[in-house]
Image (cartoon, rainbow, N blue to C red; front, side, top):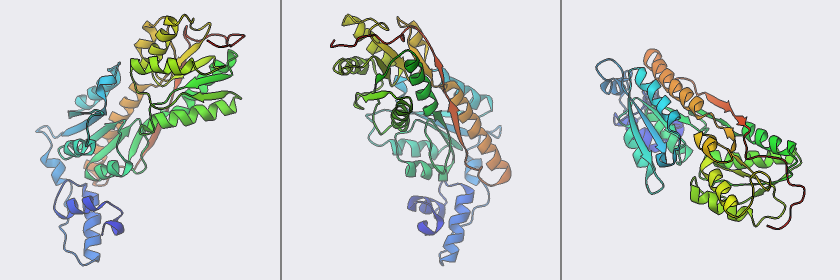
Length: 337
């Protein structure tokens, strides 16, 4: 039955047992069940969603964030919550840390009690996210998921801007870091940097993906950087790493940018208070989170009024680049350090 309906087995189970499933999905499963000779209840609109709505006719939206503790700049999340709450919804927050062995359980628990879901930078599989999308109106931020509406960064645009700036300064060998393939955006950043470097005739040296979003990882990345001959510029995965790199290089007696240029692939006020201030790709997280929150509200409203799920949309946000004091002309002679 699940194969015929194109949904997961758990979704069929919830649909047949009057669990939390979109009305359209419940009708689809019921139709397939009837075709196959099973008896299944037919849904009559969004009864479950209505049960969860507050007295003013609005309900709850779950906002699930991965590793909230590493968010140096809380403005994007605050903006999304403001949009949700200004529309009369209540936001139900959940945070998933690396120590959580069962993030799927957390996401499902929130989804079961919400009319909509905004899932930010999830570290779970696409199939699981689509299963949640069958339960309730779902939008994913900072990751593209086929079958679900998503708002994400056009990482290729930022990679091109950063590398083009370095190329214009005479840099030809550039090192970069990623934070592991389990993060969709990190994997896309790495691929985008390699592709952009090839087009610009540059060499991109991958320092590894065993880093994370932390100051400590920035210090480790600087150690790795100094073992690579010929590198004149470093592109850090994020601003916290970038500050660690700048400080470590300074402690080792190297000048930024005279001896080594440093770029961050994301921007915040941390880049501006560092000395020198760090040139950075603006990941435009306020725009991403604003659009994602607005999208989930619009999709809920369409489902309420039209009785059918909103069409899946993928919105890619182009990045911008801010030139600051951490980048300069490539040194004429690069020897051992």
